[in-house]
Every structure is written in C-alpha cells, then in structure tokens.
Image 1: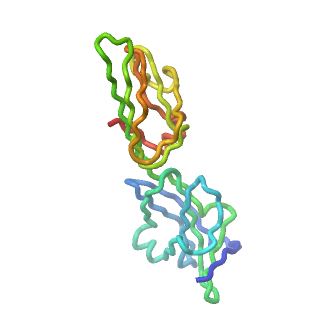
Image 2: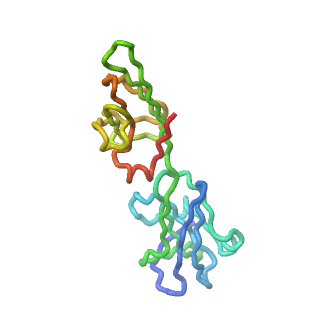
Image 3: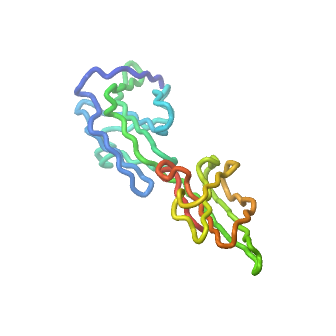
Length: 213
C-alpha cells in the first residue's frame, strides 16, 4: 500500500493527552481520540535512535477507534532494552493511498522505559593457608552484548566495597559477548575483596540489571 506523510493542519484532528504505563513488560498507551478520526498508525522505535519518519507502513500497527474502545487503549509487549518511543499518526485513505499526518507539537509522541537486560555474575575466592594473596575468579553472564565501558570492578581492603568510589576502580579491557564469560584469574591481597559495578549507575542502571549468582 502506498503511504505518505503530510502536515496536520486541522486542530480538531490532533492526538492529545498521549500517556503510557508499563507493567510486567507490557505497555498501555492511551490518548484523547479526535471525534472525526477512525484510525491511527502507531510507530515504535528506540528512543536513542534518530527521530526519522517512517518511509512505509511496514512495521507499524494500524489501530482503529473500535479496537481502542474494546481494549481500553493500545497494549504492546516490551521486549526491547532501554527507552522506547511511540508515535501515533492520525491516518485516512485518500485515492487508494494511506495518508499519515505528522504533528509538529510532539503531542502524539510518548517515551516509556523498556525492559532491562539481565547481567548475572559470580565472584569466587581461593587462597592457601599460608599464602599472602588469594585468587579471584569472576564470571559474567549477559543476555546481550556489553561494551567493556559499562562494567568495572572495585577492590577494597578489609571488606567488600559498597559503591564505585569505595575503593580502587579497575576497568575491563574487552567487551562481553552474550552468554557466559569466564574472566582471567586475578591475584589480590588476602584481606582484600572486590565487587562488580556499573561505571555509571544512574545511566546503565536504567538499561541493565545486575544479579549475583
């Protein structure tokens, strides 16, 4: 089907009050539906991707006013990692062509927080009775690829570090592939301990969840 995007110049046909709620990896979108509009197209993209208009209807969801009323909104499963941007386009058929209308005020867009990728990790210590050092074995299992800049480990004397600043920070030198990664053994002092952290907890904590095994 042919498709084009035009500017919306009729105030009574604008999407207003678009909201989104996420629960158990399911997103519910609701909005004020213009009285004379019977259908919309819903475009879903990652929020950190360029805000580029779709070139075709492929990959978008055609949703009617009757469906919206029956379901009390639009429901979508969120399997993506990170923030997701939804754009709702008013649409109509003109001469066999689907016409989608953009809104320059942005009120037909809403961003929600998607699922978090799980990162499982284990830290094991081995030491001899009379040795001054102990060996640390770290394993990381990730659902998705991880850049080496996302994680670090912190070493502290006398107990486990409570946060990134609570000890000496060491970066990782290679990216993590999906699946289980067994890191080279590390030698530390007998009274030292280490923990894994996000290098930027505020940012990466929105995208990933670290779980000890």
